[in-house]
Image (cartoon, rainbow, N blue to C red; front, top):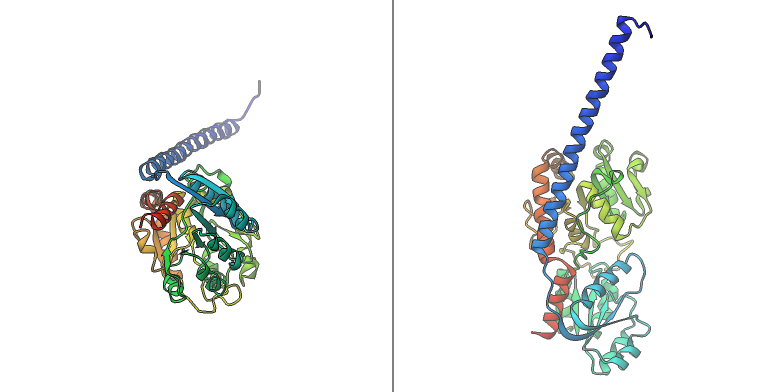
Length: 379
């Protein structure tokens, strides 16, 4: 038997007490964390069920011309086709190369073209010459209006996600122009229990357009001290890239599943719209403004994450600021709201849950396509 000194026995006893204390603290922290995660997911599921509405099936045959442009458009193609398939009696999905042939053979009630930037206007004319109705849903307005300005007059109906483009297309002689934002596909973006390696205080997902580069460069000192994560292409153009590099996942396109996990793992998700006046990336010679929210607005809210988005005039028509979403008009306001919501978890989660409910009630692709079909066939 070891003959230990009283000092050695005291050290062993203190070490044992420390281990016991750490074990108890770890158990308590794990319990609190598990309770928070469980409460969030349970409350989110309730909000999803309460808000979700599936429209009735219409006795229509729709031919859907997908973009066929690959990622990042392929998830949009899937979201629209999957949603439409559950809403109409028959759905035919085709591509721009075979659209005329398929339309002539099948004679659908509507030929719907998504995006359309690579669709030859002559093919639209051929389909209309068959006596068939055509519609286009522009997904990138107003950033490529140099192209859509030429394309829009060839369609019977024009749908645009950007409110400021409605009058522009009408001025071109388009008789039926409708504002229809993009939405969210709940099968892809929904509340999830994110793994620990996705847990962060703040995140931003998106490409480094120049207005975003300038904004985040101006916040570099602040963000460098935060549990922050940025993912997207071109972020090496930041002047402060080296300082923020440990917090940047560079030149990666995340699919919807990974993006949803990233949103779910963040306490706060920043949304910053791209500028419609970026001459390097845009084709917007008319200088049209952008007032409508981007699709990311709906995707973030569908993940029950608190969203801090820059102010756009159209935000208030989709969400109630301060109730279902939060906005900022400057870097200083963004910093102040980050500090507040990181310190006020209950308020943060309450806004996120209300945003989730509003999204499921009003902003899914089922909502959007039901609105589209109503405008086309019931009015």
